[in-house]
Image (cartoon, rainbow, N blue to C red; front, side, top):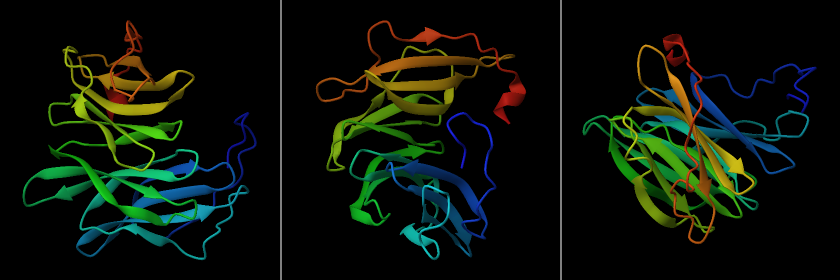
Length: 231
């Protein structure tokens, strides 16, 4: 648990012993839900466990959120009433990945069935943020172009997947998205060499939440990240 001032960090709490991959965490304001991809023979399963405000586990043991065969790279957000989970489901035989989403109750249990947002080649890495009961999901394709879609309060697709920045000439990856006062704030790294650069864009939260940049909102930030930042 890290206080708001970032100081006096408490000791870590073990929530699972496994070959876990990339945990994600979100809070409903009272407790936390942690999700991760757990390896077992022949499969990768999305597991979850709730933590109290003090960081102590609420659940006696981890529980299955979404079965494999290869469910990886989860991300979580809370929309005010339920958790929203996104992840990628790999299909090794076909060389594709499905971007999936699922609503979860505050106790971490699934609400309804998973929804497939897209089927992409190789790359995905979906990220999610929620505001006013609706959510924005972004990911990147094999050409490292940014795609986005929005979800309604009931978990259904509100705006179909579309390219976010088709005029950006450089690869886009390592996305992060969060709520902002007027919508969402999206950040990413572009792949021009020899230095990496950061971009940011404000996504408008209006009407049906079309995931398009707000007018004039794309700004170049001169982060000049070294190539080692991509490791």
